[in-house]
Amino acid sequence: MNTTKPEEPKNGNASNGMNERDHKKLGKELDLFTFSDTVGKGLPLFTVKGAAIYRELERFVIDEEIKRGYQHVKTPDIAKLDLYKKSGHYPHYKDSMYAPIQIDEEEFMLRPMTCPHHFELYLSKPRSYRDLPMRIAELAQLYRYEQSGELMGLQRVRTFCLADAHIVCASEEQAADEISSALDLIEYVASIFGLSYGNDYHYRLSLGDPTNTEKYYKNDAAWEKGERLLKEVLEKRSGTFVEAKDEAAFYGPKIDVQMKNVNGKEDTAFTVQYDFCMPDRFDLTYTASDGSQKRAFVVHRSSIGAIERIMAFLIEKYAGAFPLWLSPQQVRVLPVSEKHVAYANEISTLLRNAGVRVEVDASNETLGKKVRNGKTEKIPYLLVVGDQEVAAQTVTVERRDPIRERPASNGAGDGKQAAIPIADFLSAISAEIKERR
Image 1 (cartoon, helix red, strand yellow):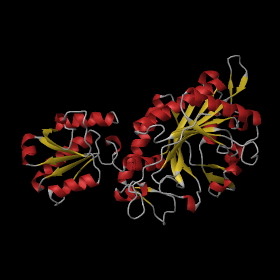
Image 2: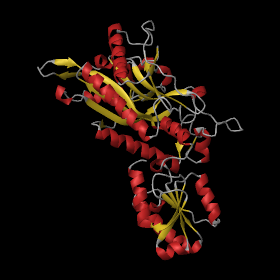
Image 3: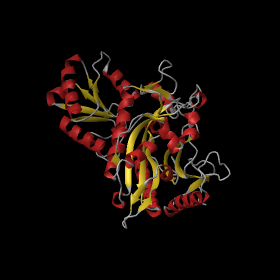
Image 4: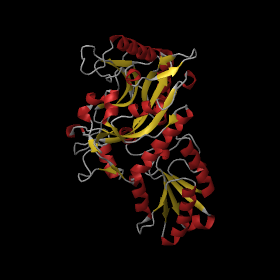
């Protein structure tokens, strides 16, 4: 077995006992999200700033998945209890599901997962081997009744948006290829976030336990074959991984992408699962090339995990100083005095029309205080405008992060810059956003 020991997080504990990078602390300081006892425990409320990050993550994953052949769909947040009995999730997940809702003498439930919805979509019409693999994806709002003691910021909540997908395959070989491709996507996503294997995350091969007949679907041969398939996929990728018995889903083994928060607690961020149970339960078949009906194979996977959970990891990873493309406010324009506000508003309008998230600080504070506030709020670019900038139709750029590989003359270098034309700044920042540097 290939194994690796994940690097322990480097914690810089605050004097009050909470880590300075803890997403709960930074989320409050940077005004990203909040909770309300009146709304309910474990139900996050995202502010304008937090919602901006949320949208960027959603757009990123949808666009990337569509490029990779996923068919994005939309299914309801509620379904009849019969659907989850058919899938087997009820009673397996009964304790973590919300109580049934009685409607017109039928019982409905807030959905805890999307797989049965996607399987019903697959069954909506006959399928051919030519349709497979069929990659059904959705950013789905899910609801799970986590115990109060298990709730923890955005990492463990009672409602979350999962970047979920179910890939219906024609053969085990096709399923193995799709599992490997799903890992390719996961590793690409991780690279965009600046996460590296072995330091920020690692693979865990989560296996079943044949003696635990209450937890797992009974099919010893299928379990052996599925676990071997996932292990071979990981070994072929030349990566290292750990094995964990009794951590599988009830319907099959899985590859979990494990991350640790700044306090050292490990959680599953992404997952790829092999399912030999649902094709039987839902009678998922396709017409083979010889005209016969054959049983399909299914892969469950999440490319970015739950938006809430990955946000928590990224807040801690960046200590709130998000890369430009994810920053809730990308630019703040700082007029030196009230007479420069009109020009600052012109610049703001130009940038906003180009898709940049920008605000003007028109307060009565001194310029020095405005700059300090912008840096405290970890805004990537501060644009100072005074008499000189108004006369020359330029901006003076002050950047949060030093960029050593590029010349300062393009407006995106170290610290405070010379006044540059706004068109040059817009060109540089647009490229930085597009490339998700």
